[in-house]
Amino acid sequence: MKQLNPSHVRPSFPFARAPEQDGAPNHHPVVIVGGGMVGQTIALDLIRKGVPVVVLEQGETVSIGSRSLCQAKRTLEIWDRLGAAEWMVDKGVQWNIGKVFHRDGLLYEFNLLPEDGHQMPAFVNLQQYHMEEHLLEKLAAAGGAVRWRHRCVGIENRPDGATVQVETPEGAYTLTCDWLIACDGAKSGIRRQLGLDFDGKVFEDKFLITDVRMTAPFPAERWFWFEPPFHPGQTALLHRQADDIWRIDLQLGWDADSEAEKAPERVVPRIQALLGHDNFELEWISVYVFQCRTLSRYVHDRVIFAGDAAHQVSPFGARGGNAGVQDADNLCWKLKLVLDGRAPASLLESYNDERLYAAHENILNSTRATDFMTPKSEASRRMRDTVLAMAADWPFARAMVNSGRLSVPAHLVDSVLNTPDADSFAAVVAPGSPASDAPIARAGADDWFLHAIGDRFAVLTTAADAPATLDIEGEAVPVLTVGRDLVDTQGLLARRYDLKPGTTYLFRPDQHVAARWRAFDPAAIGAAMTRAMGKAGGQSKTEGAAHAA
Image (cartoon, rainbow, N blue to C red; front, side, top):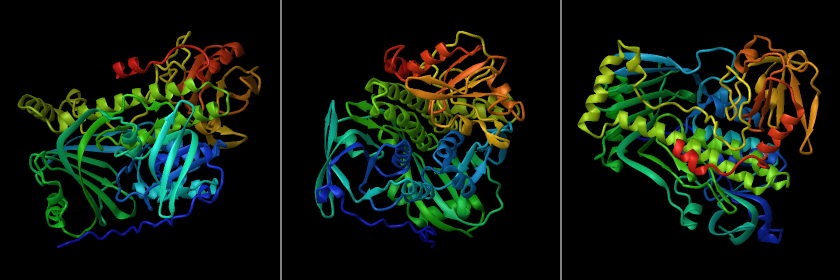
C-alpha cells in the first residue's frame, strides 16, 4: 500500500536569540505575530515603506501541503508591487479556464479572464510552502527576518501600545510596540488571549484534501464534478500545481471519521477511482470542515487582526489566502501614514470597515457555495438537482450552478475614504474599486499601468496642461498624463477608464480608486486625497458594511 512520500523537503530554520535577550532596546513600531504568508506579506510591505518590524513565529518552518494554492490575479498584482510575483508566476501553473461536470458529462466551461491586456493571469496555482519560502527570500533581501521558535505567550493591549511576552528555547523576554498585528492563523493565540471569538457558522460536511505527484496529460484547468461516477453522490475537484503535484478534493459527508479517512489505505482507492490508475505518489493528506466565520472587529486598541486570525471561509473559491494578502494591502499604507504622524489613528477604522465588508462578502459567497454543493434539506437537494439537469442546455441555469464562486477583490464602494462621483462615467472602476491594469508604454518601453501608479497616491489624467506633480498634504503626488508620461498603446486604458479630454482619477496607495472627475481640478484632488487619508469626510461604517454584505 502506498504511504506518504513528499517530494518537497521543507527547510528547518534555526532558532536565534533575540537582541532584546541580550540587553537591546525592546520597543518597536510594529510587532507581527505569525510568520506565514500573510505575516510575511505585511512585513515585506512595511519594511519596503521604511517601517521596522519584528516577526514572531512559534514554528520552525513553512506550511505543510499545498493549502492556499490558488493565487488570484489581484493577489499577484499586490505581490508584483512588492517585487515577489515574477518568480511565482513562472514557477506556478497559470490558468483561466474552469470546467464543471455532472455525473459523467460536461455541463459547461468558463473563462475567468476572457479579455487580453492584463499582465497577470486569472489564477496561478502554486503550493503555499513555495510562496512562503520565496517571500522569506524577499524579506531577507529587504533587510527583514522571521524570529523562528519565538512564541507569544502573553499580551497587554493598551490604547497607546502593546506589551508582548515571548517564550523561546533560551528563556523569555518582553517586547513593547506601537502596534501589534495578529497573523497567527485560524487558532490564533492572540485572539484567545484577548477573549475574542468568531461570529459565523461551522458546517458539518467534511472534505478530504490530497496532494498527489504524477505525470498526467490533463490541461491546466479547474475541474469540478457533481456526483461523478468515481465518487457517487458527492463532489470532487482537481487542480494542477507546480512540480507535477495535483490537488484533489473529495467530499466525504458529515459523519466521516476524519482520522480514519486520512489513512492511505482509505485514500488510495478513492484516488485510483478518479484517475483510473495507480501511477501516483501521495504527497499530503488532510481532512477539513467548512468554516465561514469572522471577528466582529479587526482593530482592538493597538492590536490589529489579519488573515485567518481575523476571518475564515471554505477553501472552495480560493478566498482565504487571497483575502489575507488583500488585508495586508489595505492595512500597510494606512499604518505607515499613522506611524509617520501624517494621518490620525482613526484612519485604521477604515481598515476595519473595508476588510469587514470584504470578509462578509466572502462569507456570503462561500456559504452559498457550501449550501449548493452540500444541500441541507430535501427541497434544497431537489432544487440543486434541477439546476444541474438544466445547466447543460440552458445558459440561465449555468449562472445558478455554484461550485465555489472564485476569489475577486472587494469593490469598496461605500468606503468613507471615497469621494463620490459628481460626473457621469461608463467605466466600472468607480471610487472604491481596485484599479484595472492595461498595457502602456513609458519612456519608450512597454510597461503596465499598475506599475506606473505604484504604491503611492497618484493621479491619472488626460489634461494636457496638467503639472508633473501636485503638492498635497506634504507629499509630491505624481500626475501621470496620457500622451506625456505614458502612452495608451492598445487603447485599453481609455476603454477601461472611460477616458475623455480632461478625465482625471486619484488612486490610493493600495491602487483602489479614491475619486474621479471629468476635469482636472487641483483643489478637488487635494480635498479627495485629504479625505482618503482619513482627515475628513465621514464616520465609521462598520455596521453598514456588515449589513450590506
